[in-house]
Amino acid sequence: MTSVDRLRFVKLFEAAYPFQEDVLALPVTDLDATAEWYRDAFGLQEVERREEPVPTVILERDAVRIGFAINGDDASMDGAAILVTDIKQARAELKSNGVKVKNWRIDKRDGKKFRVFFVVAPDGLCYYFHQQV
Image (cartoon, rainbow, N blue to C red):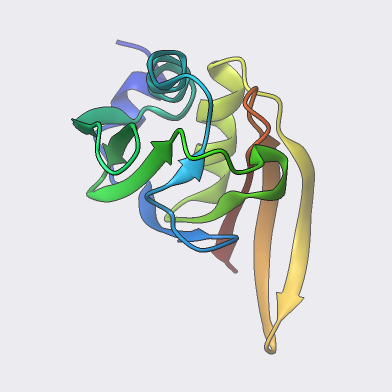
């Protein structure tokens, strides 16, 4: 078992917030490819799949759910902010999974500081990983 595998037993994802309307309906074009990529890259597991009202797959990690739907929306205009318990661990895990992370920096919002980085997935969705420091 690698150090990254051991870290997966610790809760990493705390919450996910949509950039647009619904973190359970982020736009994609292929549910099978989506489920596979997010499993391998983010460590998400499929927990639900449905066809109505549009084809949708719901993935989960640490009781945090993110959903993907074939809804015709533009993926490049959507994504999610993912609050994590350990930003360094999240970055290391994603990088070890072959994911490109960008803009490792400190953001200031509402008088608070956050360590952050971004990931743009192959489907065009953007993710803002963050942890208050």
